[in-house]
Each structure stands twice: as C-alpha cells, then as structure tokens.
Length: 289
Image 1 (spheres, one colour):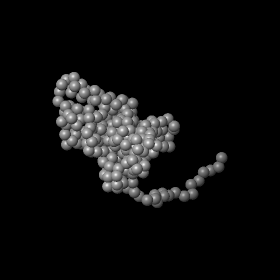
Image 2 (cartoon, rainbow, N blue to C red; image 1 turned 90 degrees about the horizontal axis):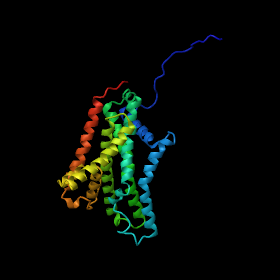
Image 3 (tube, rainbow, N blue to C red; image 1 turned 45 degrees about the vertical axis):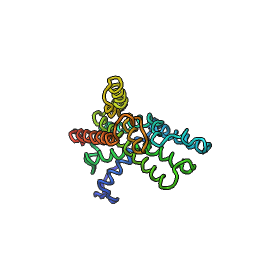
C-alpha cells in the first residue's frame, strides 16, 4: 500500500459555447426525435417508426413507378389526388400519432427525466415547447413528406402540375394541410399523454378516442337522424375533410352543408383546447428535481 496524495485542487470552468435556453430547446428536440425514431437504441425501438414510415411512403413509390411505366394511361384514373393520398396512409398516420407523444411525454414523467430537464435552463413552458416541436416535426414526416414526394416525382415524370406556378401552389397546399394535420394529431395525443404516465394506456386511449368518435358521430347522424353538424366530432374524418377543402376538392362532407369555415374553427378549437389542457396539467404537476 502506498500513501495517496492530492497535489492540486481547483475548479475548471466550462469553456464551450453557451447556447442558453435556445440551445437547450434545440437539444431537447433533437434528443426527442432520436428517441422516437430509435436512433442509438436497440433494434426493437426501431421497428414501429420504420414500419410506419414505410407504410406512409410505399404508396407514393408505387404511384411513381406506375407513372413512369404507364405515363399516358394513368392520369385521372389510377393516381389519387394529393388530398386523397391520405386515404391510403390513414392507418399509418393514426398509428404514428398514437405512438409518438406517449413515448416522449409519458416516459419522461415515469422515469423522472422531467425533473432532470427542469433542472436545466428549461422551465415548464420551454420544455413543452421543445416537446411540441419534436412531436409536430416527427408527425410531419408522414403528413407532409409522402404527398410532397409524390408531387416532385410526378413533376419530374411529366405527369404532375403544369408549370412552375401550379407546382408551387400545390406544394404550398400540401405543406399547409400536412402542418395542420400534424398539429391536430400532436395536440390530441399530447393531451391524452398529459393525463397518464403509462405509455400503453395513453396509446390505447388515443386509438380508442379516434375510432370511438368516428363510430359515435356516424351513429348519432345516421341512426339517430340528427344534424349533420355532429360529424364535426369525428376526429378521424375531420382533418382529412379539411385537407380536401384546402386543396379545393370536394370531400365526403361537401354535400352535407358543413361549411369550410366551421371545419377550420373546429380544428383550431381542438388544437387550442388540447394545448390549454396540456399546459394546465403541467403547470400544476408536482416535479421533483
């Protein structure tokens, strides 16, 4: 045995770049995206996001292949409209929406990471801002990406819009409708995830809420012979109908005397209402740091 000795004491200050709250938010967004996509995690965490992303982009790849092989026979017959494309990937959208927010919000509270985040430059507002940006951007991968890929591919194959102006207008409509749909799904899934710290319960509740609202609204309107306005409670069809209106297409509700303005008001009301509920839950939540 030899005697241990301390030859120097001191404190070394941090010498790197100080990015402040903005840097903390960017780090939170990047870390959250990596966690959802399974980057840096075991293979089992990659199965769900990879499967959903493939489900969302596969129809676009198929339609582009058909457009390349049969350029003269498909226009208006085989290819869907850009709003109608979501009908092919609705299952992937709902599945992804029910998975992302519980993975990020419930896990942080259940493992105690929320307290660690709040011990950093982040407070409750900036934490929720970072998580909202992460969830919204991840959902945008499947709400904006596939129809935008379809537009670009058809444009290059001379089966898409005529001229630059039409192409940019379509791209703007795709981005707007995809962003609204992403915000809609993010708001609902975050509201449910804020009410429980169990991922499985949150995911099951989100799926049940979507399909339960579909069944109930249809039953009330058709079997109960009630006003068509009750269809606004259908959380599955509501964002798809708004997407059709954004693209100037006739959706399934066009003949039911439901105005576009009322659909916009309902969607924005749901987003704002869910956001207020999430903030109220986190504002009153006891967090140990």
